[in-house]
Structures are given as C-alpha cells and as structure tokens.
Length: 538
Image 1 (cartoon, rainbow, N blue to C red):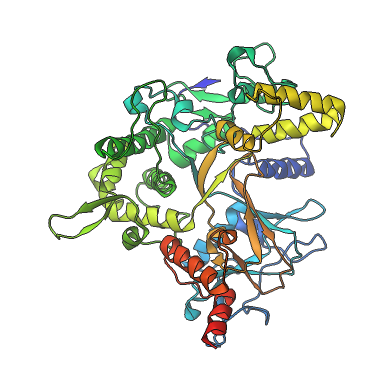
Image 2 (image 1 turned 180 degrees about the vertical axis):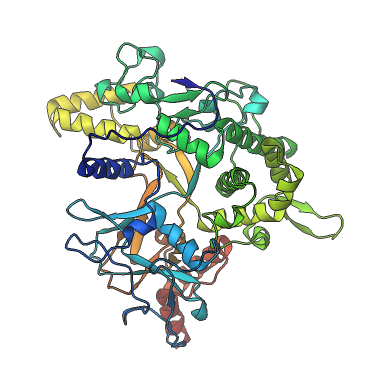
C-alpha cells in the first residue's frame, strides 16, 4: 500500500457484535505480537493475587528477603504502589508507574498480568533504584516481557553522499518495519549466485514478496510504504503508531540521514579512515548506537512537546533514567576537539546536534527547550541503559518450518539442506558454521533499544536473571530467571559478557571492574567482587 504522510486517522471502533471475551482475547494476542495500538496501562494491573498467578501490588515495606547492605538499617522505599496521589508527571510514583506500561507477565494458563516485580529506592545505600521480586520465581521462568520504550534501526550507509535519499533498504542494509522493526526481507535477500539461485521450499519463508501480486499473502497486502521517503511499515497500525510517537516518517528519515551524513563527513575528513569511494561497494559507516538511539528519543520528545504546545516536558517516558550531560567525556562519545575559549580538549556532540536540529527544523524556542546539554543527556542515558539486539531473523523461522515439514534427519531433509547450502554459496553443499552470522547480517534487523523497566535493574557479576533478545519478530525482550528468586530478593543482570574474563579470580575481577567503569561509570561492589577482595586482603 502506498501512502503519504499526514495527520493520523482515528482508530475505527470494533464491531459491536463481538463479545467482551473475544475482544480481550484479541487484545491479548495483539500485545503478544506487538500490534497493540495502545499501551497496557499500569492501572490495569491493580488487582489482588489470584489462582492464575497474577501478582498483586507490593506492600509498603519490603520483605525480610530484600538484599539491603547491613551498613544501613533504613528500609528502602517502594515506589510502585497503589494509584499515586501526586499529580505531577515528574513525581517518582508517576515516573516509575509508567515503566510498567510496556511490560507484562504471562502465566502458565495464558493469562496476562502485571510483572511480578517492584521498583524500590535504595539511594540511601548508594545503589540508586532497584528491581525486587514481588513473589517467588522459579529458575527458567520468564519474569516479564517488555516492549522497548524507544528503538531505532542502525544505519549502515550515507545516502546523501550516494545521492539515494529514497532507498532506505540501502540506508539500513536490511528492510524492516520502522516502528516494530520486524524484518521485511524476502527470501531472495540471502541468496548467492544471482537470479539463477533459488531457495528450496521457499513457501516457508515468513516474509512474502511485496511485488508478487499474483500470490500476495494477507501479511504482504498489509504492508505500507511512504511515497515520499519510502519508509516501510508492516501494517497501517504500525504506520499510525509511528506517526503518533515520531510525527511523520519523513521527519525521522531526514534526521537519521543527517546523522549518517555527519558521521560520513567525519570519516572523509579523517585521513586515517579508508573511505573506499571507488567501485560498487559504497562507503559503509559505523554510527555509535547510543547516538542513534538518543536521537530517536530526542525526536520523540520533540514531537511530544510540539503536540502539546510545550506542556509535555515532564511527561517523557525517559524521566528518571540515569545519565547526565557530564557523562559524555568519561564515556568518550562524540568528536574529540579542543575548546578555543576554555583551552581544554573534550568530547563534543555539537556537529551531530546541529545536523539533527537542522533536519528537524527546530525553532529558536524549541532549541532553548532542547539544548545541546539536553541532547548530551539523552546520549548518556542511551549509552548507559540501551541494548543492541536483533529482531528475530526470518531465516530461523524458515529453517524450523522446513525441518518440521521434512522430518529431522530424514533423507529428504538432508537433500533439502544440500540445496540450501548451494543456494547460499557453499560449493561443496555443506552448511558452514559462520553462515548463520552472514545470513543474520542480510535479513535480521539490528536495533538499539531502551527498555524503561529493565533500565532499573542493577548489575551483578553473579546475576540471578538474564535478558533474552532475538526471540521476537519485533522490539521485545524477555527477562528470564537463571536460578530460583525469592520474594523480596533484588533482581540483577550482568551488564557485560562475564564469560570473556578468564584466569585468576583477582584478575577476572579487575577486568570486569575496568570495563564496567569505562562503559557504565560505576565501581562494582557486588557480592562476587567483594568476596574476591576479602580473600586477597586476608
């Protein structure tokens, strides 16, 4: 479907003939698929415990199982309580209540419920805010599933230099919906060998060809593309939701291309960077994920500001996320330059900020409200709280369906795998171990995303939970328990790949702490690090 950007149309009312159970089931399915047009408000979770395992809101005092440092006997304050009395959008209760708008827990009998966690204030113990379990959680259970508060696909090329502004597939490398970020790449995207190559059992590829009018599926017919900027959306609902949060898709397209061009100009001005201008392989760019994600957050808040005539600065979903403009220098983000007035060198985001403001056509009053310092704060929040994930590759779904149809280890399956290997460029008809990475780069959408509830989880080098990305076709993640978690116990994850450290315990600890200090600006004092310190002190 070809569309042109304009004001979003109102949502049509549902059929009055449908029963309430059918509507509830449909909304639950839409939430699981990432197609819900509205957020599940935290007010809907204000219900008592039931047999279905849904969690009630926590009491005002934590249970005895709460992990509180013994040096301070003060009880931490639980912030997500019954409906808050404060009307200020900047109050902690309102800020943290909004964290639950995009998260849900799915019980064993398929009932959606409030995530079984609470946010507590542990700033008195120098731990900031933390997430604790509001009920017992078993090992392997999914604690909750959360949709990103904001996310952006990572650009790979500068279309301004290549004079191809309307080819977003080239900008990002992979075609994907610009709201939910599911892959829209057809099966031909992973083939090697030109038009002669064909994927075996191609009918199991989950993304239909939009150009195949004869055999176009229902999902392909729902696809929407902007006539002006060529932005792709998997459905009209995603396009409408994108308009509500970001304004027109053309506005964000101009912004992301301006950022990519600013990075491209920096590469051309640096003689040490090989720009590879000749040949068919145009210059690839590598933009810092925190810059891209922060710019998306910046644009979303500007659109919120414009739609409410400047009354929405306190209603941003990013309020309360750690990160300050002063973090840019220690995080080493941006361009290294020497300030003429102050005579000192520092990292600067001024060129990126100016390019973004020009692309968004910010008025002088808007520049005052969204200054360079505020943009630096967005970047710091994105760097310290964002995640780089891939949405689920359509190849994974295709391969699973093909295996089920053929029967694992059957002769038919082995023959199909040989045909697949040849189509992917393996002359010997054998699948290589590195082929999965090559295929992911061709058809999986890479995004930088911010999850506001997950952002409240503290780090531990011996975590009790872990994040799982890439399991959803859109920008969702699961928080899964690595071991049994007791009610009132603090939930922790590892911010870094702990498996990379090896050797003596003290050496491992020093490597972890150096990386955490450089990337997240804190000194780790988790139980595992303190045990090593105490051992070597003795």
